Length: 122
Length: 372
Image (cartoon, rainbow over all chains, first blue to last red):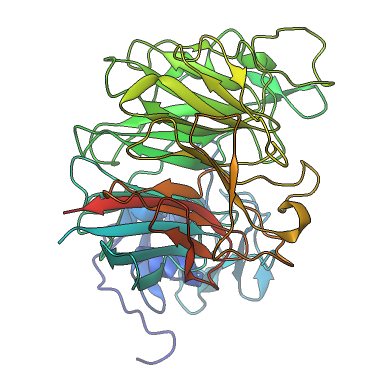
């Protein structure tokens, strides 16, 4: 498989059409194992045109892969878990508000959205 | 032929160790869930191929895994352990109020009669129950919301509910233990609870003579044939109750140290018990660098060291509270795991020991299933 090529059938995630985008998502190794995926996930995310947000992306991700609920965001507060970070376009988006639109190139599918386990501990 | 399946939870995954009834030759499977902390695994007495596992990391939180084929394959189950009511506050180490916050599942206790029913003891201390094989978990709120709850404080390892005992004789009776609140008893299937700590002492730390809670209980065990008798390894002191927890008396006797974590009861001799003395609360390794299990055949007070096959020099491992288990073969087998990654077995009730595995990650829990 070529790098960057989605390996998940385009049926996981929201329905296609106006107001949706197919976003490339890269999970950390432990969560790939948990979700039983390899490589990138091609995730359909609903939103308002270019207004697709991280919250919408994570909602779609957890909807497509329910086993990931609670592993990226706290079950109760909805906040990012402390040792999870979000990167895209060589930027750390971890502390961006969840309702800020994702970068245009992520929504366009030219750049992946990276979910990363922070380097800490043993 | 009868065989045994040992379930070892470690800092970096789960391992399943199997042997025939001789317990001399072992197959080791794992790591399952490599890289994750597996605080506890336990099989259902009603369906031994049904195994529940608590999987956790600081990165990605809590998961529950379930196997229906003896650990060959696993399925992630529900991981929503939200407190059912406003969690309120307990006391932090410094004595200030701190909101209750779920952190992890320490102990899983499957029901003896229904493989879909299991209990989970969690940190911060609360008791949850599943009736659908782990898909959903519901808090039994009567424990956390006990009047004493706002005064509970964590032990050094966290405010964990680490012990769950289901009384096999008295319908509806359950025991739980929380570090460092103490022991609690329910007589109505977990709906309501009361502390049962009379006779416990935490010298030098508590202002009241006989406080209701505030005891760093490390582990409690019961022999199913004698459910009114409980044995406890406390932070310091080995304790015994013969009235279902109403009163406790110390049975540390001639142990070289009465600090430790696990305690076990022989499968066929309700007065034969096992502990692993640890030097002190600040020195979590065996006295004199000698790993010794101590056995009492009199329900406490008189103890004998069991050393054959265990390292008797330069050994500085610990044995955690859930890391001792006992099988029910005719010649009773005793098992324990260490922070050094060893899992030991004695196929003769403790007289001699052999390592099953020497180099696993630090062992957090050991359970054993005796299978037909």
